[in-house]
Length: 173
Image (cartoon, rainbow, N blue to C red; front, side, top):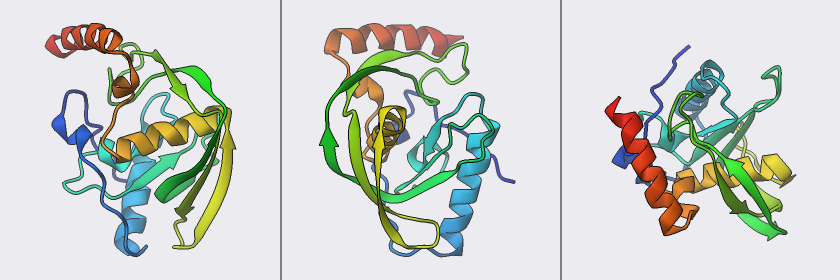
């Protein structure tokens, strides 16, 4: 079991774009296992992207499991959204923004209600899946991370500025 450190805002590595996976091999499977270990070790974590973790050169991988028993793992390698429909404005938090549950900061973010994503699974097989509601929100949030964005980047300038001031207070603690 390898529990990795979750990077915290304003770490500049959170803005780094993930590199595409060329081939799913033992190294990639180990990265995925370490990501799930970290995910399941964190409190109230719905999903993680490789760019949130202390990897020197993170791959384009995200792991998701928000089931109550943590027994519905989903790994998306090289995920891409190929279809979006509808809209939802939903509260979002992030393991990299505020860290601990008590300090995590939630803000309303506009996301697509329904998406179709294409990705590769842990066996290296391409697949597509449809997602809606919270699953669609999680996937969009994690793909943002893989592209070098935080949910803070989706807020108005005024909201982002207020949040950054609030976050700097946490950082000083």
